[in-house]
Amino acid sequence: MGRFGLSAQARRRGDTLAARIFAVADVFDALCSKRPYKEPMGFSAAMAILENDTGSHFDPSVMVVFRKMALDIFNRLANGTENDARQLLEDRVRQHFEM
Image (cartoon, rainbow, N blue to C red):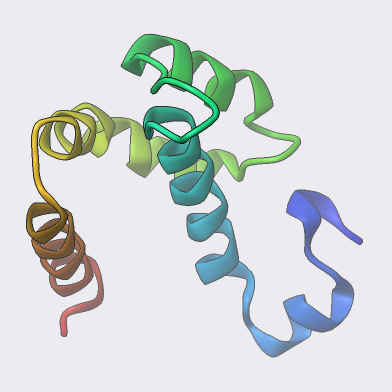
C-alpha cells in the first residue's frame, strides 16, 4: 500500500482521485452521523480528526477543497432528510464533475 491507502495497482488504474475524495467523505459522514451505537459528532470535533489525519490518511489537496464546503454540507445534512442528502449529492456531482 502506498500513501493514502492505495495500492500501486489502484494508482496505475487511475482510481486515486475518486478514492481520495471518498475517503474524506466517508469518514466525515461516519463521524457526523447518528448510528445505533453512537451519537453524531459535532462539526468541530469531526474536522479536528480529519485535520489530524491529513497527510497520512487523507490527501492534503482533497482536504483543501473539502474545508471550503464542509460546514455547508454538515449543516445541510444535520437538518435535512434522506431526500435532502440525495439532492446534495446530485448537486455536488454536477458541480464538480460537470454531469
